Structures are given as C-alpha cells and as structure tokens.
Image 1: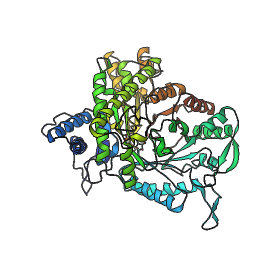
Image 2: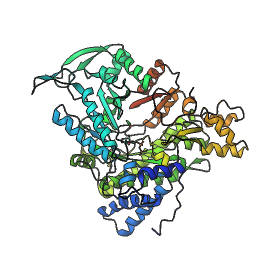
Image 3: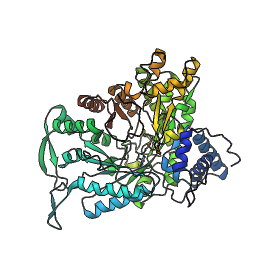
Image 4: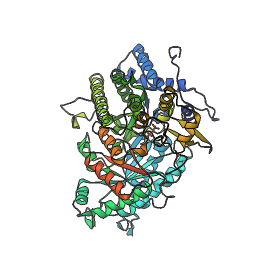
Length: 574
Ligand code: UDP
C-alpha cells in the first residue's frame, strides 16, 4: 500500500453509502476495509488481468496504480457490482443481464432461477416476455389454457422479493412486451395496482410498423407468438394513448424502440435484441451481460474549460479497465460467460454532466449545452474506439468480430463501447450530479433511511454565492422549500440561468439532451424526463413522439408526485 498515498475526498453521503453496502464486512457484519482499501482491492483484481495478456509484474503494478488513481480521484468509477465484488470470492462484476424467457414451463422457471442467482450477486435482469403464448391460449400437454405473460411476471416478482432480503442491493428487473403481443393491453395496465410488480420496471417494445400506424392513425396486428397468426387488430393510436395515460398516471410503462435498437445491433447475425437491462440503457442479446463504468465529468474541467487531454487519458484507461473486468468477472452461468466473452461489450458513460455545465457557466437548457453534449460524447466514443482498437492489436478482436457490422472496417476489442447509465449510487459515491440529468434541486431535504431530514446544498452554487457575498444558511433553508432559486429576488439573474433544475427545463429540452448524447452512444442513454405535477397527457405524448423523431432508443417520464415514496423529495411540492 505504501505507493498509494493519495488522499481520498469523499462526502459524508458517500462514506455512508460505502459503509452500508460496499465495504467488506466479516461474518458478524463488522466493516473490515476502508474506502482506500476498497479501491485498492478493486484496482488489484482488475489490473491483475494484464498478466494473462503477457504483461510483466512491473507493468501490472503500473496498471494497478493507474486504476487506483482513476477511482480515488473520482474521475471514473466502475458499476456497483465491480466495486462490491472485485477481489472477493463472489467476484460477479456486471450490473446488466438479459435472460430469455422461453414459452415452456421449464423455460420460464429456469429464467426465474437464473434471475435469482444474478440478483444475489448484485446484477439486474431484463426479460422479454414476448415469446410467451397469450392468456387463454392452449397448452398442449394438459389441454388446459395458458395464464399468459403478465401472470408469469408475478412469479419473477415474488422470487425477486424473496432474494432481496439476502442481497446487498435489491434485485431489479425490466419486463418488456412487444406492442404486437395479444396481451399488450393487460401488460400496459399491469402496474395499476401499485402493490404489484414492485420489483419491475416495465417497458413496451414499439416497432416501426406500430409507430407508422400511430402516425397514420391505422390499425395494426396482434400476433400470437406460438402460432404466428394474427389474432386481433387494434387501433395503434388507442394503444399509444393508453401507454401515454398510464405513464402520465404513474411513470410507467416506459417505451423502447425495438427496431431502432436492432438497427444498431453490432452482431445481427447472432440474433435479435429483445430486451434491455432494468434501467433501459443496455440492450443485450439473450444470456448476455455487460459491465458499465462512468467518467465523472465534474472532474474534467480546468481553468473554466473542458480538459480534453485529461478526458482522453481517462477514456483510454477506462476502456482498458472495463475490458479487464470481462476477464476478471465470475459469471453466474456458463452460457452467460460464453456469450459475454464472445462480444466483450462494455458500457462506458458519464456522470456529473450538470456539474460540468455549471462550472462552465452554460445553462443546461441552451443550444450551447446541446452542442457541447454532442462534441463531448463524440470525443468519448471516438477515443473509446481508438483505445478498443489498440487493445485489439494486443489482445485480439472480440471473437464474434467476423460476424459483426465492424468486420473489415474497424477491428475492435469490444462490440459496444458506450452506454449512459443512471449512476444512481455511483454519483453519490463520486459526489456529483447523476448521469446526464440536470440538477434536481439547488438545496433540498433528503429523507434518510431512519426518517430524519437533511438539507443539502449544491457546492458549486454555494461557492458562487459566497464569492458574491450573498451566502447564508437562511438562504439555503429558503431554497430547500422548493429546491429552486428562480423566484428568489436576491439571487442575480446570471446565477439563475446557470443553476436551473429539472423542473425548470422543458420536457422537449430534456429529450433534446438525451438525443444529443444518443447520437454517439452505441447502447442507450438512461434519462428521466421530469414533468411537473400539472403536466398533461398531451405533454407526455409530445415527449414520446419527439423522442421517436430525434432518434432516442427509449424514453422514461416521471411526473412529480405521481408515485408514492419518492426517495428524494423537495420539502414542498407544487
Ligand atoms: N441495478 C440493479 N439494482 C439496483 C440498481 C441498479 O440491478 O438497485 C443495475 C441495473 O441493471 C441498472 C444498472 O445497474 O440499469 C445501472 O444502474 P446505476 O447506474 O444506477 O447503478 P450504480 O452503478 O450507480 O449503482
């Protein structure tokens, strides 16, 4: 350890989160590592992989130092399972999995079992239930009738609930059903009862054909996946309206543009992508997994400009890191290991985007922010590809490269390189704004687990106000009432423009930001379009259609106050 003397600057919240779930504990639950030791454990386990590729001990140590520096300076963090499990006997390092659900009892219950194993190890699972025969369809062996996808989903939900108690992180699922499945209406409404499917995010898989039918106000076919027969026709607009209504009511279902996802599938020869991971940012083939990592953009600013050189070197090191994770990983199933190692997908993304913007004094809802988003993500993708090609020279391309869209053009080590994750916990550890989301509130009260209330202040805002001699604790309390500074007279206009929050940004501006990033993201972008409580169904419809027009791969909306038990709450709602 003597070489690792960097002092780690963690926020109070970060230390709390690390203590609760990330630091190693002994059998009695006593914490037995410090945050520095955690990063050392991870750096050691991941750097060690270089030895497999013929690197000397000296080189491995150099890599270890690089990785340690990357994490302890909070420039980059790998997804939670890597932080929790690298260098431990469990060793499961990926956040994202997709499992197929076959149309048979064995198939369904195999998937339930595999999901439980994955949840226990800290991973999230996505499923498409589209292959299951519809409710009321015949069951050959018993001459009975099938109970349908929604009914089987509750088996997955209960299994997840049970495993939750043992794991360090609650199991998360994505349930997806194609819009042309005969049970689609039941599926769209399945979370009406708020006590049901609490361990699921649900999304409807929209096809191009369906979207065209919505736009032209036509009917479309519902097809039984067992017989491939059309069993019914529905008006596309009515189904779309129902999705919109439900999403307006409680934020779900989200939508996923399936054909668009498959249009950028890097290995179409291996089959279709049917589902994504729980938060939607990672489309995967059946039995495939992916490990993510995020660059903290808040740390990529120097002298009030983007530090492109630091960003470049961070991208290169991060690609090296994430590629090593694929080999260091202990996979929960052999077939997942085989598929994952054949495509070697990684998901490098960003967090702290809003923090970068406030440091650069660029309002989130401005043209300048959109063009910087494009420039930045283009740079990350380009440098990521350069780094992956360099790795391919040393270690070989991903085994399925000859079957990929890159064959003969770009010899890559990884079939995908970029993904923008929500960074729900990583951003707390790094003390930055999450993913590419705008600031949620400038000052806000956080309800902590034991029910107490803490007022937190955006540190960049505080610094700016202190510079102007305008800071006071009373001001923080006042701002925390709504989270916003827009109506507070003593705050200068210039500051108000820069420190905008999610609700002051229009829904279309949210989508435009998501679309700006998506252009240079191989996988998908996690983004929640925050709507004020008074938003209408028409607003939701516009968001969905704009996302479609601008090339997003999916959308999630959330109308303030529409769901119980929001984790982060402003003290007063509108
Ligand atoms: N995830 C999960 N359980 C959770 C949170 C996340 O399984 O409680 C998975 C899920 O696949 C999600 C992905 O991790 O899409 C990334 O989520 P996030 O970036 O918020 O995770 P972090 O690495 O910050 O913990």
